[in-house]
Every structure is written in structure tokens, then in C-alpha cells.
Image (cartoon, rainbow, N blue to C red; front, side, top):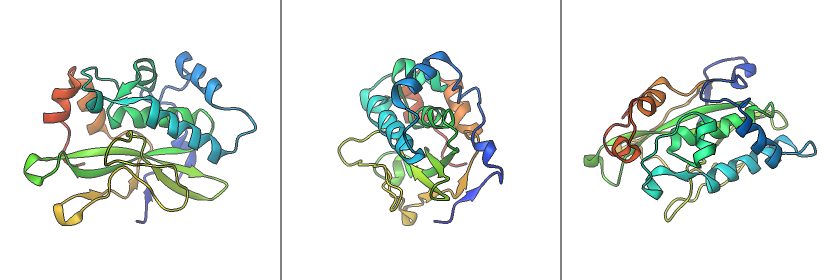
Length: 202
């Protein structure tokens, strides 16, 4: 798929935001733990991706009710849905000067169209050494989901089935989409939010 950058300025994909708050001390401590100056941008991205994928639980998988949004809260509580986890991965990588954006898919919420659709969030990372964007999905693996770090062929959590009205949105956003942030800010029960209130389209 041909990705389209929302902004032509790579610096826009490095900005600190309220949701991508990498100056927060808890983020800083994890940055010191994960990274060292000898690592390449690809090595840093792999370390950060695998940390968020494996060490931050997806709220639905653990049946956790807490709603997290800002990267520091996601890290502090070690849980969140894909919107929240993408904020944390962006925060970790932007802290290292690695441009990171937000991408979205429209997916079936469960296993059939009748059960509704949802917007799923993942990240796109720009590797200067490769001069290209790579999509990474740190949602978290489980039976049937096997997302991996790959700079060649994408290994995302979910394929899209266009015949079932699923889709990949081509835009790489510099900020989390307002619809995804709004739903996190408006709810305080993650399970209820996940089942009934996720946006169905951008």
C-alpha cells in the first residue's frame, strides 16, 4: 500500500503532545532502560516495539476496565487498548529522534460484520537509514495474532478483508486521530468502551 504523509515535515512526527509526553519522568526512566547510544534507529525501534507489544497488556485481553490514554499513564499502569499503546510507542521513539506517526485500519470488531466494526490504531516509523516508512502494530500478540518487527514485509496484527468492508487507511498522521482520543477521554470502563463505543470509521 502507498502510504500518504499527513505532513511533509518529518519534524511534525517528532513533536511532543499531551498524549505523546516523552518528557514525563516515567517515560524518561524507561527510555534510559531501553536505549543506549550504540543502538541504530532500527535497533531502537525493535526494542521499543517489542516492549510495548509484550509488556503492556491490551485491556481487552486482560479484561481490564482502566482506560489509559497518555503515554505516561499507559506505561505506569502497563495496560491500554491499541489507541493508548500506539501513543506509548510513539512517545518512546520520538524521544530518540525517530519520526513516528499514527495509522489506522477499519476492522470487524469481532468475527462477523453483524457484530460491528471498529477503528484500530498502529504506528508508522520512518527509518532515515532506509529512507522509508514502516508500519508496526504493537497491539499485543495472542492466539491468532502474531505481529512482528519487520523492515521488509509487513507483519501486522490484522490483515484487512476488503470484501468484508474492512480497510487500511493510507494516511500517516502526525497526531493521534481526534476520534480515538475522544473515545478514551469520554469513558472510564475500558470493556464497555471497547464493546460499544469505538469509532467505526475515520
